[in-house]
Image (tube, rainbow over the protein chains, first blue to last red):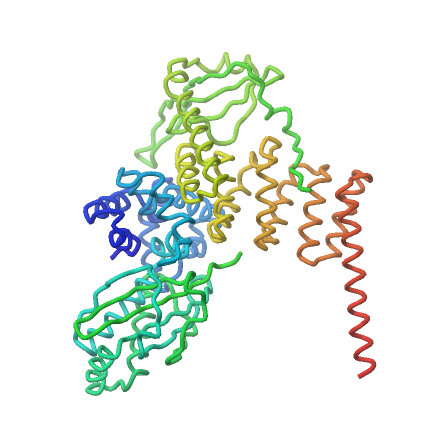
Length: 275
Length: 271
């Protein structure tokens, strides 16, 4: 699932085939830092494999582990990250390179004018960095889907992304707070419509977890596991039932989901990390 | 007022409209380890540009045939003795690539000036893919991230700039200043100080750099350090107008702080 791509298809900017093309371009051109290090001759493939193995065990960042193991200096890691950044192609750029959108469209879709639209305001950094690079929203959506499948035995499909949602349309909701990545505060709300909440409640009554708190505890648990798999740690997580995000909707990322019994929604706020 | 560093390389980096071209030479190299170790002859290609004093500024050509990396100065005799001219390479590859990089950065600058920051990033990255050490493109990319408020990315570019000596040369003074100002505006004070100190190491006699360091400390509220560096700047030029103005601002802030401390004491005493 590619959020930005999905969003562009929904907006009628590109076709499914063009999206596939852009995603293929990205897969072929974007490199992980280990690959960049091997290509530039600063690490051997064996060293990269060793670091990746270590990464699976302690969930640290590749560069941090390489420095800790005295395989790379901080300066070398910085240089590799810079080269990776310069050679990284965002989906919008890939679509531009493939000729599926024009330069003007690219700017209009991803630039300021777009983000300032009255309807469906989306923060620029979410479009650019968050959707493309960050695994947090993906992990949260997966966690919610997993919990709905477990308790309601229903699939949860993504119905729309980006467009701001009024979270009070989901009467059963909870706020999850914590810190992730580079000590970055995180706030997220996951909510269920009345009908879906009833269906989930039936499943909950059969298991050891009880009530909405049990359901959201399960989501937090899955969310934390999925973040760890993506090399991110969720620290100091707390659950607040029926609470909402304090952040401006323009700075939040939203995902609308549907299941046969009803709807669900996710809103996420993740601030830019200062120096 | 902001000021860029004056470096000892001023005369070296001011390129006159002299002769320029591509050259090649063969060097001995060793490849492999142990039983597979062997000597090889390797051809390297360079770009040389005549300076005002008749010497040549020479840089290696990268895989895109763009001069990249640290330049060194050699004499005309050394160039003619050790290198073979490659006019075809220059005319068909090097010159067109140089034009391409320059045009791409111009386009990026234009996008940035118009606030089209996504397109600006795209073009700066395109230029940097051809010449990873292109100073204008590196600064431009960093400024674009700062304009977008993406401080993580700006921080990455900042660390890159610190490794590029040429970024602190006088020909990039305008970009140097703009980057410093924007870092301060985003509260990246520690980075701004590191940045100015890096330039100061290359040009120890530049009062403008000392002024910039003092001003960063002033904005950060570290008045004692601000005074120290301002004094150093004024020792180099006692009539430095902006420095004198900053001195007055520091004095005023110190007086305000002293007054507020006095008020606090008075209140505590009354209580």
